[in-house]
Length: 211
Image 1: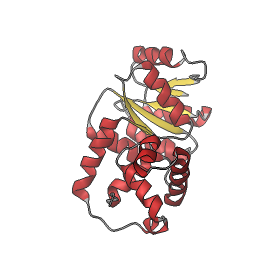
Image 2: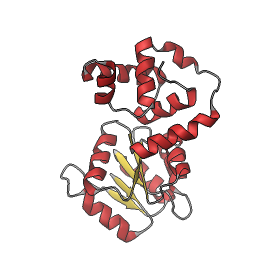
Image 3: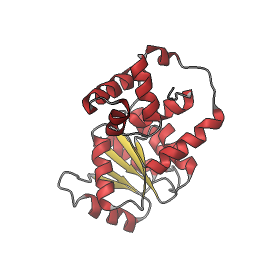
Image 4: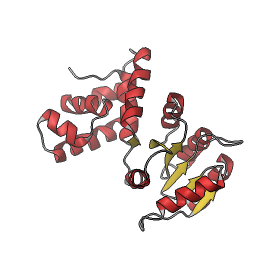
């Protein structure tokens, strides 16, 4: 993992919280976005834990470069700023998730593991705000990829867009959780979505709703 934050004490605290888990190792640290990009190319970490506000190249710019140049490297944006534009811009830049620095250590470690597994991470509050932000821009021209989805996959996508987890979707549709997981994996492949978070953005932008 690559840890990026412009404050030394913050990096130290986050590193201690992460390395309390034997399954997590910080291979490098950076204090700005430009250094983060260089370190990402050098170390090819599974996950980059990225701050937003930094001098020079900020976290959003660095995330855009890293996800474009190193698609196998996944970025989890971590910030003290609970502002809508940061969450939206980070996810649009290719981040796999957005987490506040106020998150508990166990929550942070869990989020890193989830991102490393290829899952997306956003807090329920962020998901709700993304839904609210997306609504004023709708409707927009339908994306052709919607036509590749089956009726059930589109229904699952609508529920994903509402921020529901796989167990919640399974309960809503009265099916097995394994069935939901299969539908989610198939729709992600058809949409070319990096992960669940980007499927949420797609669903919101395309106005995919239940019913």
